[in-house]
Amino acid sequence: MHLAGFSSHNPLKLSLVYNNSENNKKVATAIASMWKRKLGAEITLTDQQWKTYTESRNAGHFNVLGSARVAEYNEPSSFLNVMTSSNAGNWAKFKNNDYDEMVASAMMEKNSKNRNRFYNRAEKMLLTQSPIAPIYYYSRGYLIKSWLKGYPVNNPESVSYSHTLYFIKH
Image 1 (cartoon, helix red, strand yellow):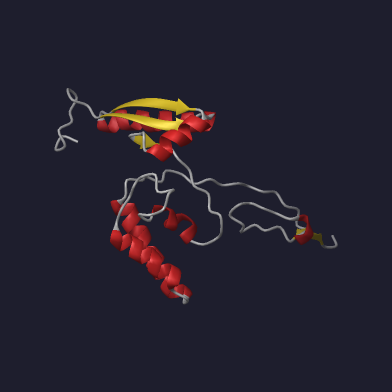
Image 2 (cartoon, rainbow, N blue to C red):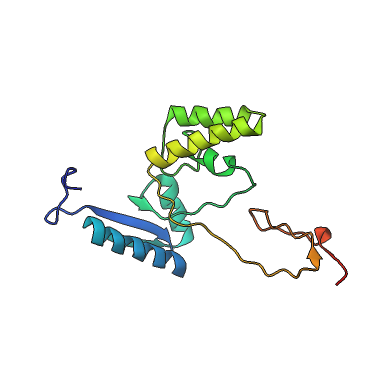
């Protein structure tokens, strides 16, 4: 921070924008507290109603944005495609031609091992070069009776259809 010109007399000042929910407020407050303690940064928390939040997000009116992603399908491209230069959901405005080519190559690769190598390289680029900081992952716990079968436990959207469920004798 000192090399960038910031100090206790000239602290880094940022606004963290998030959509208002109690959980998002807790996460934003924790981040602001940690950045204050470890970096000396002064963070202004800005909670916004969903409509205002999406307008701010889409227009790029933020310093730091609290955001979440959920996979639409069980494949790395569900997350990695979003950060390509031309993707409208690339709210961080990350632009890296090598990353874009890596993701495009993965999408064209038919061999799953080779495709995953491309995805792994793209993910490493994203985590070392982009202005994003994944801080936690959503999870859900399910209690499913041992005699209920057909529940799609690997579905990233947690979608289940009754026609796939069945009971076994117990």
